[in-house]
Length: 314
Ligand code: NAD
Ligand code: UDP
Image (cartoon, rainbow, N blue to C red; front, side, top):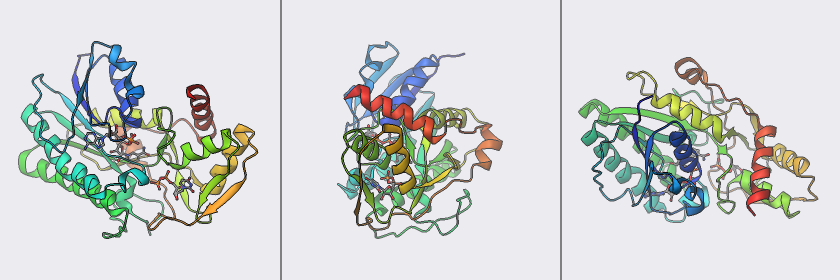
């Protein structure tokens, strides 16, 4: 296969570092752009030993020029965990909007394809359940999640407007909750929180009554979906849902984690954060049809891999 030069923004983060590794394994040159807002050097330590990997420490809110001819851009730069993206909400919006414009401009300059890592959060607290791509969502535009939700919605708009106005080659995926190795144990997301708490026999922190649902995708499945989307026919822009459609309550997740770790942890309840979606589950018919993609790793197996990862990195 032809060697491509591929930019990954957010390449030192959880998904980005897994993607960079996969792209290198596939024989590509990878340029990682990251400002280390939530990214970690340890995620890319191994990758830095590879001559085909380059790191540019840069904030995508600032314009960038790259001399090498770029073939593809995966735009993942943006904190994904609620405590992180809510820490500086205006920065989150700027990353999503100004950063998206800068990356679309970079794509235009190189005539490169660009894939935007959008999110199931564009559906907000969904009234339609499960969610098809045609659902336009239920987002509170002035709530504490809006910096992320509306930022990502605007980023999608920018992709489609750049495509219509300038012919930019775009690909938009809507990622549903994904977990796996290289997640920052302290980043506050539910799977990492529960596993660490269970391994340390600490109380498991349930927000709300724990009956809210999510559908969890293992990272390898997600990355496969991303790569397939980038390689899909030029006329397919998305948006396409990428996620595992098996739905769990947070109580069910806690029970699984306790059992898999043989933990003595008890459940402890905290108030549900504002605008926390009550239910979430993707319809993935489009991904199956257009990308021939289907997630293969179910939650018990994926949790086992994640537990192993946390046990061996501590
Ligand atoms: P993460 O926080 O681990 O990684 C984000 C990376 O982006 C970090 O390395 C961070 O330092 C970098 N970054 C943030 N702002 C930046 C900026 N202005 N300039 C340059 N780099 C910047 O999060 P993740 O889980 O790996 O998510 C990656 C992408 O996927 C995000 O865009 C996120 O919105 C999207 N996504 C993830 C999930 C999920 O479940 N993991 C779900 C939906 C969407
Ligand atoms: N959650 C929880 N305990 C935690 C962390 C999260 O009960 O320690 C809940 C959170 O309120 C939400 C769900 O788990 O309902 C998923 O949270 P996460 O932050 O992982 O993802 P998101 O809310 O962005 O889907």
